[in-house]
Image (cartoon, rainbow, N blue to C red; front, side, top):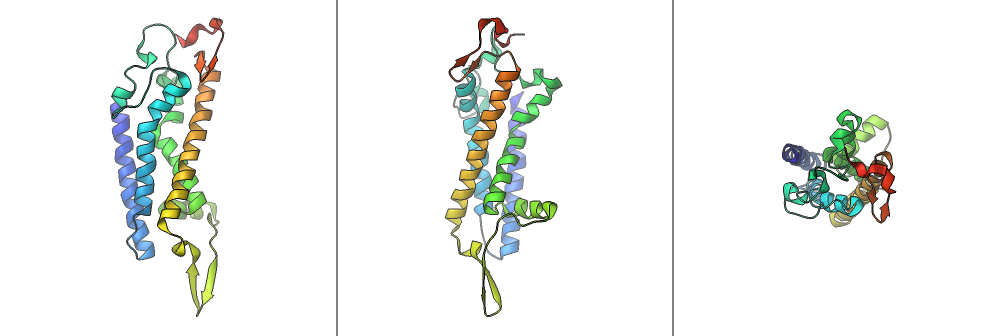
Length: 207
């Protein structure tokens, strides 16, 4: 059941990355791939780190693999009895709405918003948020020289902007997923979270 979800995430992220790259070129009159690579990096990071992070937090058996199917093949969610990973069985909670909070597109959107607020990139998302909020997200100084305004962002290397955006995105990803996982642990009867084990009378998250 995860294959369509993963495919959808890649399709949407790829289309959005291309749109952001084209938009960046149009508004700057320069060939820039910063936005494209920023979205691609965060998407790939989520793809490969999600399962190991799940396994680390819930001690469920999820691990690193080249595909999601391989990454969760040893997860205890496949067991008939005993504790079963709450993330991997999110459809069992809140009539399935709990899956929204661990949905990759939703998490990626949060990370990209954080990057847009911090760096102004992806510019398409940054401009959209500025129009919605009615304010400038990233303040950049201007230098008046012969009646021309030079934006300091243009003088900031793309490598630096990419590093800042990637760092903010990854930090947001880690914080959000940690908090989400902690809430899943506290609000369900699943017994394991990092080094913490709930008392045996919690029934271990079984059905």
